[in-house]
Amino acid sequence: MARDRDLFPVDVFRDLIDVRDTFDRFFSNIFPARKTSPASVWVPAIEMYDKKDRIILKAEVPGVDKKDIKLTVEDDVLTISGESRREEETKEKDYYSCERVYGAFSRSITLPTAVDREKVKATLKDGILSVELPKLKGAQEKAKEIPID
Image (cartoon, rainbow, N blue to C red; front, side):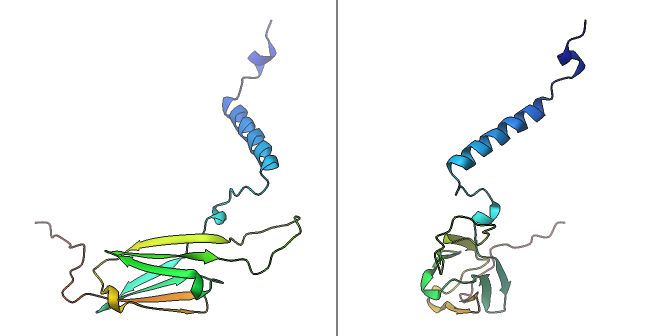
């Protein structure tokens, strides 16, 4: 006589997914503000390009005031850090969707060549942080292509 489990094989992966979903529901009920979305971690998007005598970096920092941004250059690394602040506080708890992220951020970018830290200039306009990093005189690029014989 065949038993039910012989007729319907156990799907271990489905069972594991069910267990995970149960845990996710359990913890989301305990910690409703838990952020699991990749959008809950934000770093500025950048573009960086090389001019003959300087490196230009542009970073998107929409809604961030210049007083809330800190720039540092240490060795060959530029770090942009700061805080995005909420303009208004909402007392209601019934959000339909909230994809805007608030809080501290930091992004470190390795520069392709040595720069003159004393002459770095930065401006903020329309949510775009522009950083001009003059190259050191005689600085060589970090990478050199080696021909293969």
